[in-house]
Amino acid sequence: IAQIDPMEYLSLYDLLTPEELEVRKAVEAFVQKEVAPKINDYVEAAQFPTEIVNAVKPLKLFHHFLNKPYGHGTSYTKQGVILMEAARADAGFATFIAVQNLLLNYTLEKFGNATQKQKYLTKTRDVEYIGGWGLTERGYGSDASSLTANVKKVQGGYILNGDKRWIGNGNKDVLIVWARNLDTNKVEGFIVETKWPGYHAEVIQGKLALRIVQNCQITFTNIFIPDENKLESVTDFQNGPNQVLMHSRVIVPWIALGVMRGVYEHSLKWTTSRKQFGKYLASFQLQQERLVRILSTFQASFLMVLRLSRLAAEGKATIGMISSVKAWVTDKTREVARLGREMLGGDGIISDNYVIKALTDAEVLYTYEGTYDINSLVAGREITGIGAFK
Ligand code: FAD
Image 1 (cartoon, rainbow, N blue to C red):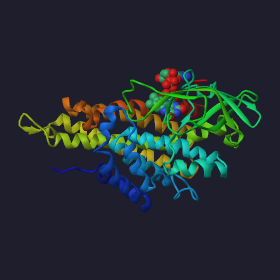
Image 2: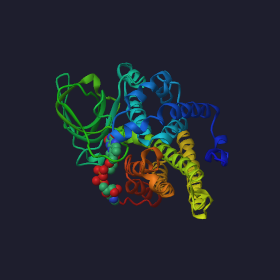
Image 3: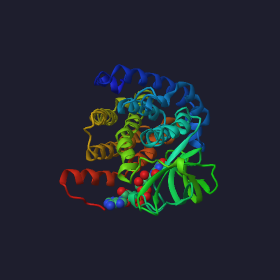
Image 4: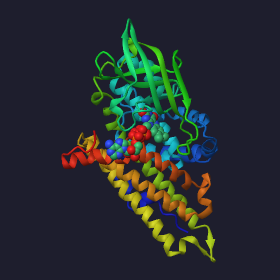
């Protein structure tokens, strides 16, 4: 029975450049060989997939997320297709890549000086160091700009105190910390090494989505940060973490596309190989409607996300456009995941069949990088001129 590639079906590959096509194909080959067959053992154990991450190193995959001279040269779409392919196997694996690159490495590239880039970015790019990006706190999620982690200037550096919550890779090597300077009341950025005294990270337990991502509750107790680890070009929340989020929110919806595509593939495969009432499940009208709805939702979302990525590359994507696409596409991913789950019946709750992971992981895509509500309100503010929050 034919297995239609949802990208080929509407000639969506034709919309990608030769370089984007080449990178996508290489990542697809790696992911299908090295990630898809192995990742679910880590998912079930909620463990970081060290073996798989080590296999990424020789590919120099993370060089694709950076401009020259630190990387191969990059674009929103190139980064997007890498994440889409990773998410076809596991949205947690894609999220690990996103945290390391869209958040940590992008911050170092954008706000770091030459010495900081040499010391940290060359290592985080080559996966010698793994790290995270700490904005959210226990008391400040959606209202992130009110954060209370703080630094006080002392001789030769700063003293950091406070907490961070939900921080992916927060128990690895290095962390970007966004903290309020008690002297100026402005949000500033710092590169913190997790081995420094006063750093304490606990992996959040009981997390039933993005299982392989090690999300941490972190406390900082009188950590001394030397002057040279301050991101000097950050001036405040707007010209700091907000710039990073404007960038990452363009690319994160590609993870959602990967999840939709993964659901489509697993649902199609299942319904064209399992029989009930003497016929393939795919021969029943209800199942065909669901398959077509998943296919079309993926394609519509792809076109929207690609358009946003191209506009962002031209400097024409506004904050409202970015937020509305992120909100809409991640909302649709929840719907697609639920449809796929239904189509597999009882086997739809087994991790190897993907769709149950898609269902729970979609809940995080909907929530992180700004919740559906907050992104809708950001877009709503832009199209009405009326702020409905804050
Ligand atoms: P809250 O802000 O408490 O919101 C709860 C509910 O209230 C939501 O539905 C929200 O939409 C709604 N709400 C809040 N304010 C309003 C309003 N004004 N109007 C209408 N509705 C409103 N953060 C990092 O810094 N680094 C990370 O690496 C990171 N990784 C994450 C990974 C995971 C798995 C998760 C779950 C989160 C991660 N986050 C990370 C944090 C994430 O960005 C926050 O969870 C998110 O911003 C929402 O904050 P909150 O969870 O505190 O929810």
